[in-house]
Image (cartoon, rainbow, N blue to C red; front, side):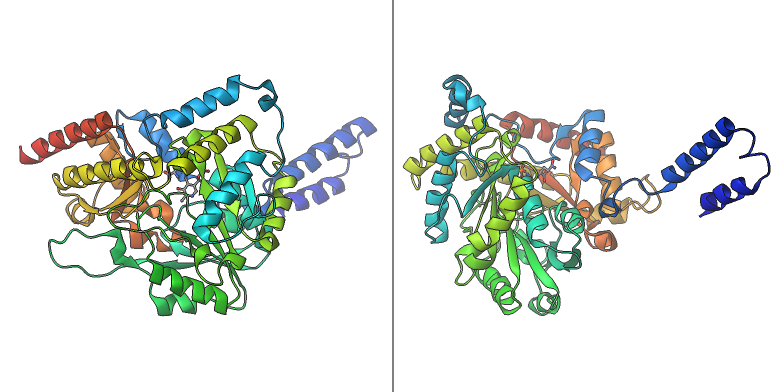
Length: 460
Ligand code: PMP
Ligand code: GLN
């Protein structure tokens, strides 16, 4: 506004624009350039979403000497069969350096249709019910772009994997949050992620005629909650009643512990037709850098997801898809047997989880036992009472200040749970931090050493 006035005033100043053609033109050009720079550069879709927790906390973890239990990735090798599959894909056939089919390397879409067809109880067609994407991130992004329209409401269960909110906003949608809340437990009882539940009445109240989609994530990042069949039935009945699409992020589906069962919501009656199920080879085969993911669903939804793919990425790296196809083929042969990675891996990870619960309790942290995923959330309310004045910006949530203190003073990196909340609900979650336990034995030992030192400092 002020610059607009400036240009108009400049035009009126005698001599300024009239001292010869050259000077006048360059002055106007200069004023117009300044005016153009005053326009917002980025599209409005990006307003308010420029901060990213992974960039911030990965950077912080690199600055300090920490045992990194923050960002979720395994720090050990993928299974031998997967590594060998990738090596063969690189060396065996030079044509695998070239494009493959746009919707996915055919043996991969075929095995995914076969494998998930059995799990979801659907006769799946590799071409119309499967799309290979660049990681689960790619599948999520396409799905939001394809199915959420300007002004549509999207129900997001809080806390939530952080990208759901910006992806809704980038599609022009309006996020509507509903939070998981912990139910009361007996004194001294180790709380479990299963104690975090949706209030059915509150959930029902979030649906309106503008509700286009609900995002579900089970096993859940960050809580480690595995939604029970009856919880999913509630979500399913509301989606059907209000004609809502379900975007179901199941990247940790193989990582469920104790006697928990992972249920895909698309396998419930009436849900296949309205669900896009999203998965990740990175999580499935402990190879997060491969960035192969997929979207599964009925053609009526997937055809629009494919349209976004065709007009943006078009094609995913061939060799990584070959490695994933062969790894699934191997798993198919071993499915249900102890030799299956899908059976042995959760057992190893459950052992790590139990190790971590025991270790963290030794310094007064209160772990919430995870039922699944890579993660466990820890209650730091006692520290919030004891150390309310931790350094940090005045409006910085306590969990963020605590994580920075933990990195700097105790050499342990975690992720504050308020990063998984909308800005107005961060206070509800600022007594929680998240640890990743998909780490090798030596990392857990290094964690133990830091915790032992912490305990000794507390006693001194
Ligand atoms: N969904 C959830 C819940 C996640 O934790 C992640 C992080 N890996 C993703 C999606 C993205 O997965 P990918 O690395 O396959 O893109
Ligand atoms: N999904 C992983 C996590 O939650 C990593 C996310 C990321 O690095 N963008 O830690």
